[in-house]
Length: 343
Image (cartoon, rainbow, N blue to C red):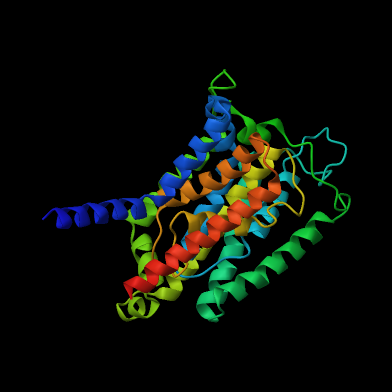
């Protein structure tokens, strides 16, 4: 009887560890760094980590849409760069000496922001059409758009009179979105960009869990042939999903320009790898059909803690890359093991 009880307890513990592994890793990382340097647990450090994670969260949530359908998106970073440049180029102060558009009048703040987000949505729409209508594998389709978008952005960035100069002199009302906060105390204030990321995460959670789009997204990722047979218009919903992801990348690009106070055509470079890694570590299956918003958030925070925390205690960036690589491989191996056991 005791042996049976011990076996059940062992299974319960194993199940708990498996279910909450990502959160356990996050806690262990924070505690480990805090033991080395207790200052890491200060409110100002937490604020900085959340600030740096905000745009990455939005990008990773966009990538999660694609991964859950069983696809992948390599154009993510270049869409971020394109939309950062578009928004920044139209939101410079009138007094700035090297304006991208010297004769452009003072535009309402929302106009360039919306245009940039629409640009991201359109690239996502193109990705969706290529994948859904022409049956090009997502890896190849988004690889092609990644290269094409970077080329188009570079041509735009190189236009006269700018000619590939970093875009600066952004309007205060735009920069405030990325650097402003609620509260007068700098340490205890809540950055606007963090609030935006939280709102986006809540909306995405609702889409994932409470809408037809979310239900069909999981069905397509779980078994695309079964989804087709059950009457789901797979092509239509793939186009919707890629378009939404593109819009989220566009929003992230706008926020990144506002946060950093400028933009270049190289903004967003390699962000797609960070987003995919955060999703995978956060429990989004590379095989499709599985993934949660809290898991994605935890995945982003893990990499933010690694980047910020290990730098904080003076560990070489090269060791950070090694640790991140090991975590990514371990997460994928764990995911594939679960996938094989379920078959």
